[in-house]
Length: 344
Image 1: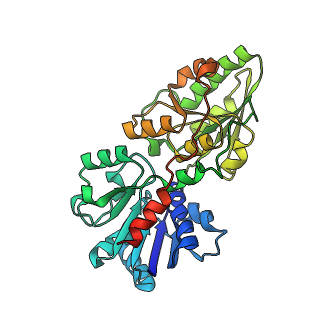
Image 2: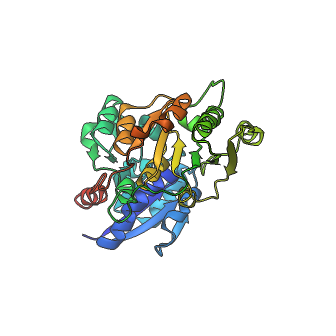
Image 3: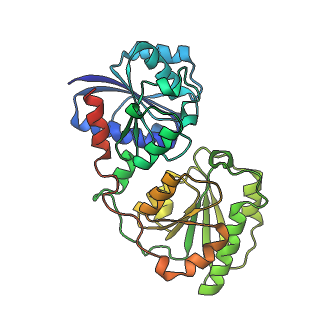
């Protein structure tokens, strides 16, 4: 079956998931793919030869209609970014009865992803591909229609934890630590008295004393994060003996930083799963409420959930330093998405 597919994703998380599906379609199916990407995600398909069109985050319904008129797709395939772009395209598809498929990329903020919808969630025509049964259960509790949710697995995590890409425990950078920052408003971090990085530095100082070695902490900004004066001050003013802190801008690639560290610490991003798939010991700071589905997904990938002031204690626990990541995690996810799209 030949299909004309309009693809759209904005934010990096959704871009990684959807671009994994796009790559497989291009390799295995007879389809014409037109790809629209937000600026932070343009790099994900740059090696494929596709002509990638830049997608505005604040796309209007009228602008989305122009895109649909130009492409005349049989199918719309989107992610769920924070802006209005993907949803405005779904609004046009809903109005015109164009088949719409959505790849969910993370275990939180389900209803918020349809905040710009011109239709009620209960009446949605979008078919949503979700990571697991836990995510589906939580979506049903938020009013999503059961017949529109399909459990497929996570396409990007399947790619990360595949036999070809999986990396066993690395011995590189035993004294180097990487902190993956995220925008505070994105993760729901509000009204705190002390930034988590402050506690992290103090915990690493404790661990430095126990191992008798200086530790290096690299703080990497998220691609969508603007450096705050607060975070900059923490890094610049850090004078903890035993810990040297380096601020790494968003231009530094995660894979390059992972090569030179053994332990990765963050909040609740896909990047933590990527670190686990690279054989790193990974901590998720337990500072904001998390869905049970997200907690289960993290522990299933070998990610340890820990309170900031317990980091030194956990680092000293050798029994807890178990192998990170599991080969075959979400195996078959990408093909599950494609099979459902081509059977519509």
